[in-house]
Image 1: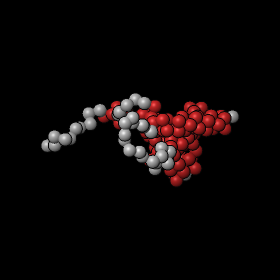
Image 2: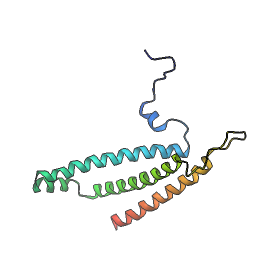
Image 3: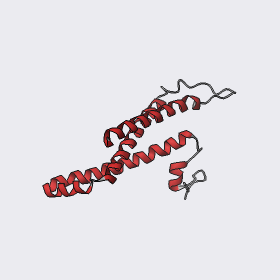
Image 4: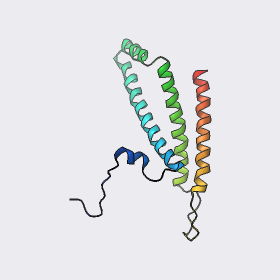
Amino acid sequence: MPSENHYPNRLGIRGWLFGGNFGFERYLYALHRLTGLGILAYFLLHIVVTSSRALGPEAWRSAMGMVEGPLFKVGEYLVFAAFAFHGLNGIRLILLELGIAVGRPIEPVYPYRTSVHVQRPLAVVVMLLAAAVAVLGGFNLFG
């Protein structure tokens, strides 16, 4: 029997991705989770393909033949772009959690000040850096 203070999560995956306000930081939060799941899926596929090497040269050639082609080239680029965003956004989150990027906490006295004005420029810089890394990686991969 649940207690009176217990509220079940009825939102499911929608609440996992989009819980709370729909600000810029919330979209970064959802994108960070999605890129993490994409990187995990790539990691599992990588383990399956690489483990075929233990089954002999013919199994290795067969597995490598399945992951060649233009569709997988685009997939490799998307994995690279996900790594770029996920890594740089992770550094941003570490800086925020440690208080390095937002400064020391202040006493909540009216008029209230939030750290959004400090966090948002850092988030924009992270997005620009991730985009630049993704573009440079695309030139390297496709060029």
